[in-house]
Structure formats: C-alpha cells, structure tokens
Length: 49
Image (cartoon, rainbow, N blue to C red):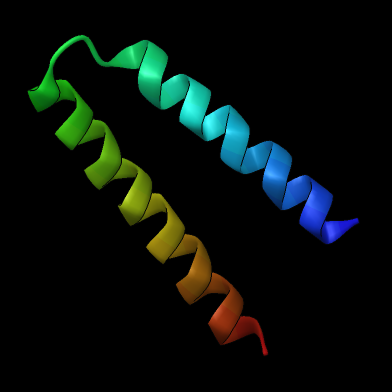
C-alpha cells in the first residue's frame, strides 16, 4: 500500500515537473524544489520516530 502511494506521488511529481518547466533552467529549479521537499519530508519523518 505504501509503495503504491509513493509510486503515485512520484509519478504525479514527475508529471508536474515536466509540465511546469519550459527550459533547462526551469527544469533545474523544479528539481531543486522537489529535492528540498523530499528532504523536508524525510527530516519530519525521521524526527517522529
């Protein structure tokens, strides 16, 4: 169940990433913001344990 949700989330993020960037610079910014979001989520979950 969790793997399925993560897969759906990843695909949705990838779709938003590719739809939102029109240039390589935009792609770089989108990847950076996605990485920051993943890092923030990981830190939140790490602190909950």
